[in-house]
Length: 407
Image (cartoon, rainbow, N blue to C red):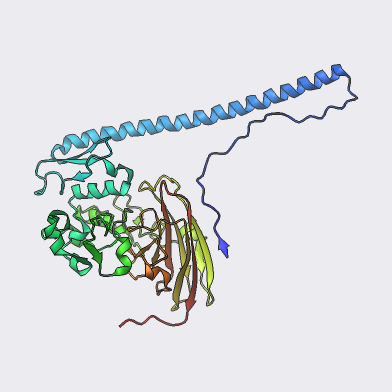
């Protein structure tokens, strides 16, 4: 069994401050000579300490220099924002942050100045949702005109919703269909959209997925690939030249030199494996086992509060890859799999979220079965949220020499 070492955050070089310099003093040495040696020992000790302090000061000064540059950059960006606010005064979004935990977490629907929000200035209130970054994004996307995923005009093809309960409990606003909003139709329905509610959001439950494997995917607060694509597409954010992005990626309007990639694909054109290729697992006809340790580590670009560990399972051309989850250590089994989970990207669409797994029991019975994939390679993602204990996922994999037949 191959086991990943625990994932730890990168840290500055540790400097060990010397507490003593070991010098052997021969008992045959005269007392006055011992004093001389002891003085030398003390001198060396002070010299080492001085060097350590100087090095420490140099590192601090270097960090301060970086901080000064960062502060300068922030001032420049603030000046740019002030100019933009003056230029687009009627289309400014304001975020209202309240410290009280039980205050609201809401937003008006529609960009400032739009017909659904003609007031001109948008206000988002954050209260109890402050602990989950994805919920902030959920409300911010409302302010940009994005409705709930479960309110899409095509939602009944994917969801079983008790309309009688919706009416009886007066939930038409949150659970009704928004016929005039077309922004959602820029992408396929995605059970993993940050704009979806947990299936247990209302008790008793009034909503479930027709695809039962995806029940625990609904309400996940990782921002999906389709969520960001939808906003970029609706606001016509684009680049002068489109890159030949692969595996479902598209040219990043924020940096036209690279692509925005679906989870598990890397590189400027979304054609590179994770870890520079070292996280590629080569499948064989016999079962092999892999354990992936998962814990949250802030890396500077995972501000959504999740750390993901990706692997590619690769097989010879034309083979079917089979994957079986053997064990989930310290996973929190709860609908929406928001604390930690595993996503096996076995469905053909690279962009849409596959069923998330965080339970190996009757709550997610499909997770106990062998999952077959004709995607080669097949991407596996194991993720953990901040403030979640370290976890580990163990799975087996192999390939078989037969094609999956549909229909």
